[in-house]
Figure 1 (spheres, rainbow over the protein chains, first blue to last red):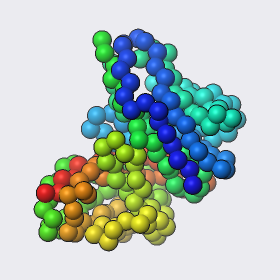
Figure 2: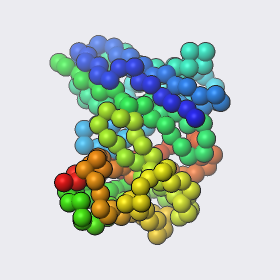
Figure 3: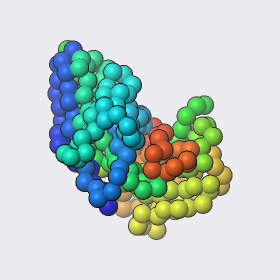
Length: 112
Length: 115
């Protein structure tokens, strides 16, 4: 069974500053990794996913994440955030059919 | 309507009430999911339906009863709930290909409060 740890529950950041959200997972088998975003009063939306190939994955809205197998990490980054990036971000891992295991989420608050 | 819709968006019910949550997907997907989202806790997978057949029941109490009459609709019937069942209930759908690599598309959720 896999588990996902998001190391920061809240990340305040100023507009146009970079942000990194940390995610570590534990699994004994090969995994597929996802980042989802949840804007206020909305459902989750896929930002990006790693299935195979290049360890640097680019997603929507200028986000990217890097898969590091040796450190079992999949950290999410954005070089310059906007007010509209204020949301909750969830890391998730899948190693079996249709099951996603989610982290507890990281709340990003972007301030002007 | 596009994507995944859920009704109602908000629901307040007493512990003796019976209510139902509805989810509809307009994406032509063949798998649907119910999740429970509680504050500061990971999303909990409750039920999975694939081609209208339940393939996962994640040790959910019997006071939650799912129904999937067709590939576009999913219901969650609620009966004699407890206050700790108050949460955001999210529905999702996916096109099942390889399963573990599928992207799930989420609805906006139903905010349930049990008094």
